[in-house]
Length: 115
Image 1 (cartoon, rainbow, N blue to C red):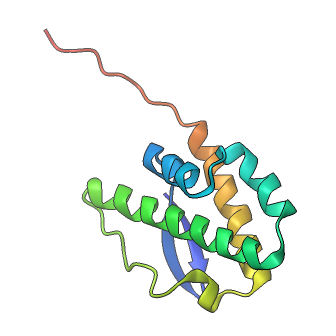
Image 2: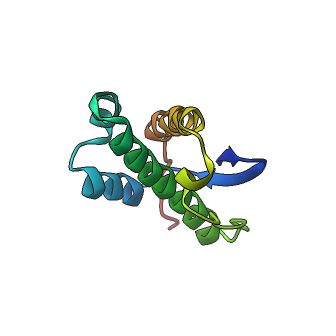
């Protein structure tokens, strides 16, 4: 599980199918189009969108850890935009998009049924 560091505190991030759907529901575009969308937006809207992406990624990471019986750690104590500067938000989004790319390459092995 990858982690995003915000002011010295680590938060798990992942992109399950539910997270992909949450992003689509929030933005109305496929994840592959989010980067272009962010690039074309005014700064104020970009901040709102990056804030939402960070929250979705952390919620997905926490839920994944919980489902597998691991300690998800603390939840975000506030909105990311309340404590992150624009440059920090951009760095976080770059890191999260790396997780999206990595998670989309994951493979799952099927275990054949026992007779």
